[in-house]
Image (cartoon, rainbow, N blue to C red; front, side, top):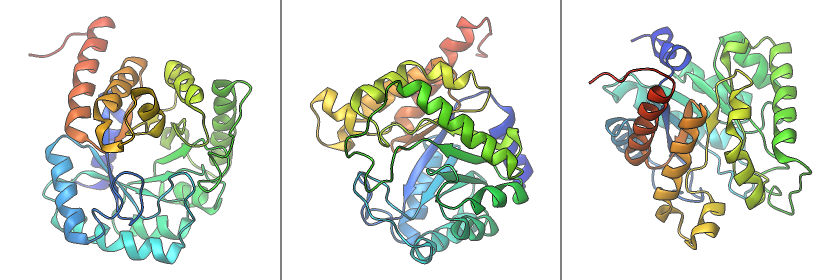
Amino acid sequence: MNKTDRLDTLKHSDRPLIMGILNVTPNSFSDGGFYTGPRQALAQARRMIEEGADIIDIGGESTHPGSDRVSAEEQLARVIPVMEILRQKLSVDCLISIDTTRSEVAEVALAQGADIINDISAGRDDPAILSLAAKRDTPLVLMHMQGTPKTMQESPYYEAVVDEVLAFLEQRVAAAMRAGVSAGNIILDPGIGFGKRRNDNLLLLAELDRLVATGQPVLLGASRKRFMGAICGEPRPDELIAATVATTALGVMSGVRIFRVHDVRQNRQAANVAYAIRQVRCGGRMTP
């Protein structure tokens, strides 16, 4: 399958897509240090594909609250060996996303076979990433974040969080399009947990349909997030699978297209069931 065929799945199917998280970092909040070697990363990618992942999102920089930035050189040293082995060894030709804010990292990753750029800064850290996405005709995720990963949870504040997130994303879509990115290649992410209080996250989840109404595909990344642990009285991120599944089902019913998750099998099942319900509600028919 060539790159054009792979991207048809992203652009033309309304079936919810599961993006499996593959952090090749030593310090990510939930799975840091687990998949830093190429062979470990390959095994995890294969596992996620078997469990129903449509996209593998590879990141070489932890962005949990309080984290320090990682240089482009260090990110490349972490992600490129993994990218190379995945494209060589994966029997299924899945989509691969590069999770970075640096154009240098994205450019090398695209050359190694990445299909999508996932930028949590929405092109603010490095505006050249917008021009790169335009030049390579590459889907680009633009995410909302208040502050930086180092500071984002230091007293974040909003007057009207949904309105403000929407306004920010509209501005970043305009910036991307000015750089030449086609509207059909832009994906929006409300940035759950990135510079938000608990109630901010809940309001965004309650009004996901407003993001969907923009007409751009929406990506939801609520997997194992701390605010759900506070609600559930569970401090361990890896014990928040059921909580994450609830947000996935809610997102499907709201029209969200892509779900970035750690636990693929459980979220694939939730997405499939919610999608079947949504189709029936909208007058469609499920095939046997």
